[in-house]
Length: 144
Image (tube, rainbow, N blue to C red; front, side):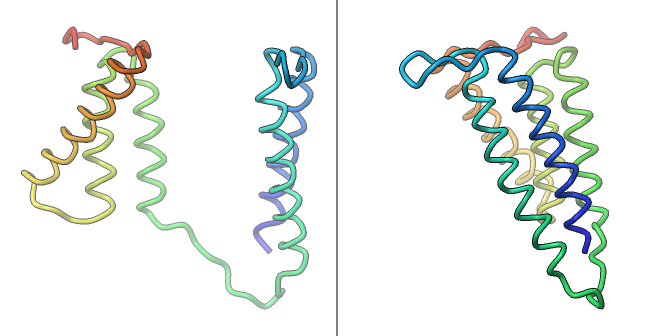
């Protein structure tokens, strides 16, 4: 029942993505253009959106509604704040705090384990993406 509105939302988003991809130019399989990858991502999203719409129409009308938990809302807020502070705080600091919040939400751990796991995940992400793959990360106010 709740899948139907979500399905229409994602279908609209997928149509927008497909339209913008076509406007940018998709190229060919041998020489893909700027919109090639986003075009296929939009098509796949449209297929999943249609599946949601069909599932919503077939759902039992007497089924209980599922409510989102507070944990999900906090995780979404944490991701939003992460995107806002990334330029100011830098990748390392922002990612460390995001990981700490997400790991705390997933399972209650002692503070030392939480900080250690967050530092390890941040360090691995920085090594893989920043050093090995040479992806640019915002440096932030601490210079790291």
